[in-house]
Length: 166
Length: 147
Image 1: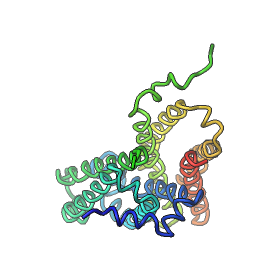
Image 2: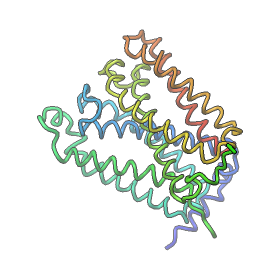
Image 3: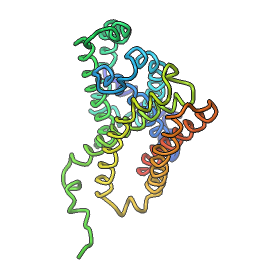
Image 4: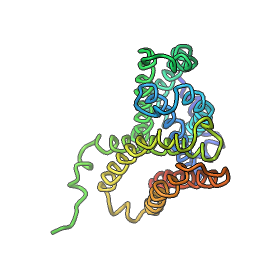
């Protein structure tokens, strides 16, 4: 079954059409997407570097992870809702865009990453604070997170470069 | 003799160099602004309250600077691909003005206040202005493509 009818329907809804045709709202949503990315992405980057011992060494891993958590969630909600709106407005273009699907795949992997490392790393920070050396699995989690981060930014930007010829 | 012809710029003669530069620009602005936001949230009293703003500034400043340096190297390279377009683009002009103010503010008032133990009202004021300035830079940059 093809998802195309759904994407086609999305694009021609009143909401999708209004978004797409607005000279002000569409770029504002995109700019908010980027601002949210600075908040969300910036904190993920700092968390990863803290685990790797490359940033924020004056603050414990627990303090970084636990205090960033509500802001990361807020940032994710902001980025994701703006992202959904962007795709909604030009759904057919996104449907045909391989970079969009690559980005969604990476997002899925971000979810897998969170599930895999939640127990041993992100909900286990008190243990990490006490560990004389940062455990390998925490470092692996941080490196994978950085790789996913770079991949998401890359695919996100490349979406705009793909030319759809229908 | 000295006329600059952008079509000779390698950025305009290679399919991948321009997008790659933009990706570097975006990733590094996210890090520079995101690290500043961490200090701002503390100044506003709504995040990272177990640390002082001075501690957070010390924690994040090296990465703010590294990322900002990459932003400020990739930006002019992007600009060089089509200077005439940028110089006449209202979004770009606004972005450059906001960026100048944001950088000056960040390394003077913002730093001074974050290093002190500011009264909650002063902290909130300084943090709020910082967020507003950096958000303006992002919006100006994005609107380059739409103005």
